Structures are given as structure tokens and as C-alpha cells.
Amino acid sequence: MATNKHAIIRYRTIDRCLRDIDRQWTWKELSEACREAIASSTGAEVNVSERTIKYDISAMRNNDVLGYHAPIDYDRKEKTYYYSDPKYALTESPINKSDTELLQNAISMLEQFMEVQEATGIHNILTKLESSLDRQKEKHDPIIQFDHAVDAPGQKWLYKLYQLIKQKESASISYQAFGKRQKNRIISPQLLKEYKGRWYLLSYDHQQEGNRVYALDRIKGVNASLSTYKELDKATSKRYFDQVVGVSVLKDRTIEKVVFEVYGVQIDYFKSKPIHPSQRLVAQSDEAATFDIKVIINYELVSELMSYHKNLKIISPTSLSDEIKATIKAMSSFYR
Picture 1: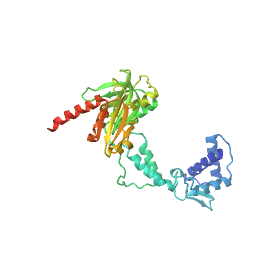
Picture 2: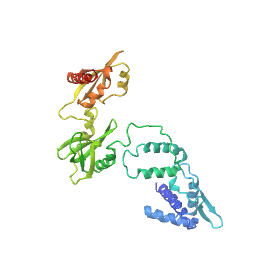
Picture 3: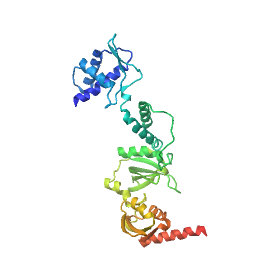
Picture 4: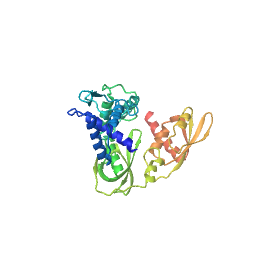
């Protein structure tokens, strides 16, 4: 293991030396530079022979495994080594050619998220990758689209809140719910969740002394707080949204079994994409299929079920079917 580590140190040291064009580098000078680098990095005192240096240079010239193709030439008169391409740098070519296309595709996908979160340094990382791959700079038409708007309100807080959760730090936020005045809240952020293109934050609210979900698009500011961070039970935070479809966990309601019947081609849709992890297929015939889920009934569930129109009917509970009936009746008044 040490030998392999020493080899990597030697490769990088030789590369650093050959990029210093103000000096001439014989094998002895390269050997001494490698000896010092190994001693500095590992504390080991080793002698680096001429044979080792020549073997390293050969490996750097053509190593398909490491992706090294260094343009190292030898001046027979001066007995020195140098880069025929003075702009070359070994550390800028860390991958082989077979990896290039895959990494370019990954870069293109990352660029889709560049405006979604203000991740410090990601622009620099992509720039370095593009440089090392000698990637063409012209922009091509996208061949993949994501179901989010890169400039959606609230997404600018994603990275900052992510870091607060990771570092377990509390925060003071300015929050303005729809139709209400802006208020300052002290929170301990716990979990970020996306639902239908919008982001939500599960937090412990210090004033209310309980859990609360905040919509990121209604947050007006996020600042550091000196309040002690309060961490929720991991099982509680991880499974908090498992109780519902969406993000609204109504504290005055309990989990209920919702049974509904689905018709036509929607049957296959429900079987391939359940609306909730608890969904079960209870019965099926040629014309219909019966499913059930166990959730807290909330606005998002009602909206989801109603989106299937005449292809879905609520069997139970009756309170839910009555609620949908009332909604349909109210809606019908708009179309008289």
C-alpha cells in the first residue's frame, strides 16, 4: 500500500517539477524532489533510484489505467526531462478517454441544477472539469428536462438550509404565510422535502415548541440564531411525511384507511405508480380495481383523488366521499 502511495506522490512531484520551466530537471534532481515530497507527506525516508524515476516517467507517458498521457521528452545533450507541451498538467487529466463521455453527460445534468441551489464552488468545479476534458464551450440544445423551474421562489434558500441541517444549527427566519403578516420565527431545521415542484422545510419551532412545516417560497430571509439547536427524534423526522400525501400533517386528525375504486386504463397507472407507499391492491376485475391507503386525510389527498375525475370513486370513509361531493357541488355552480 505504501509503495502505491509513494508512486502517486512521485508522479505528482515529477509533474510539478516539469511544469517549472525555469529549471532544468535531470533524473537526480527529480529523485531529490520526490524524496523530499515523500518525507514531507508520509514521514518516510526513502531513496529514489534512477531506475525508479525512469519507470515513473514511462508510466506517466502512457498509463491507460490512470489515464496518464504526459508529453515528457528527453534532452540528450543536457540530459534533462521536460514537457513538450508547456501547458500540460498531469492533475488536469485524471480520467481516461473512455470516461470522458460519461462525465460530460454528468456535467450537462448538473448544469440543470446550477440555479436550483446556490452551492458555493460548483461553478468552479464544473469549469475545472470542462477544462480537463477540453470540452467544447458552445451550448447544445437540452435533451433532458426536469419538472421544476430553476428560478422558482424559495429555491434560493435550499443550500443555506441544507447546511444548517447538516451542521445542526438553529436559524431565525422571516416568514409570510399567504394572507398574513410577515413574522420572525426561531427554528431548528430538520428535513427538506420537495412536493410537486415546491420545497418545504420540516422544523422544530422554538416559540410553538413543536413541529412545523414551512414553504420555502414564503420565506423572506434566513439568518443565524444563537438559540440552542433542538434535534427531533430521527425516526420522527424521517417518517414525518409518511403519514400523508403531500406535506400537510394536520395535528387534529389521525391516520385513516381510505378505500377507492379505479376504472379503465387508470388501473395500470395506479399499479405502476402508487399515490402513497401504503397503497395496496385489494381486488381487481376486468372493469375496476379496488385500492386502499392508510393516511391522514388532507387537502393534497383530496386534490390528488379528484384529479382522476370519473375514473375514481371513494368507497370509504364516508366523510371523505361527502367532502368530495360538496366540493363538486360547489364547483358545478360556476358552470351553470
